Image (tube, rainbow, N blue to C red; front, top):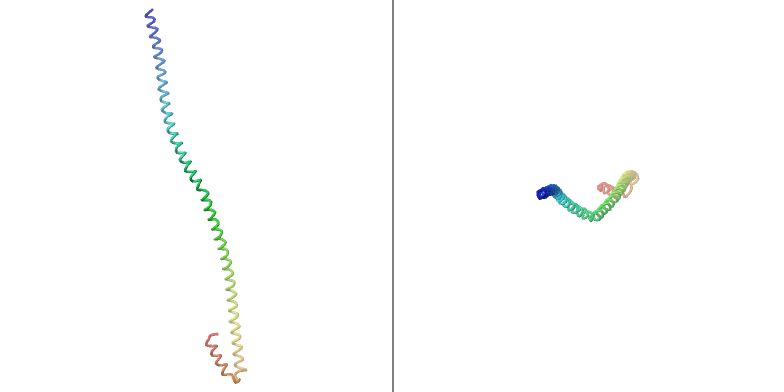
Length: 150
């Protein structure tokens, strides 16, 4: 009986050892999984920290958007003013060109009229005033006019 108790005790012990061996293997597997999970947790923590830094950077950049928009608006207004000034100058240039052409045309007409009047004056001097008592006076005027390059 004692042997039997000892043998049964040994068998129970062997069963416990076998159960402990299985538990030990399970503990090793769980320990390995725990280490993998801890490594994964650390990796995820690093990624989360990186995402937080990225989020902060994006929020900081987003705070600059109103100032950038205002600057863009100012630039658009400046472009609009420059475009209006350009169009004004373009119209003014056309007007000045037209005015210059009109002045040039008037100048040519005045030169033609002055030449016509000189010719007429010469005709009158050479005909009617040649024998007039003041003929020498008109000749002096003629030389004065000719020397002033009318």
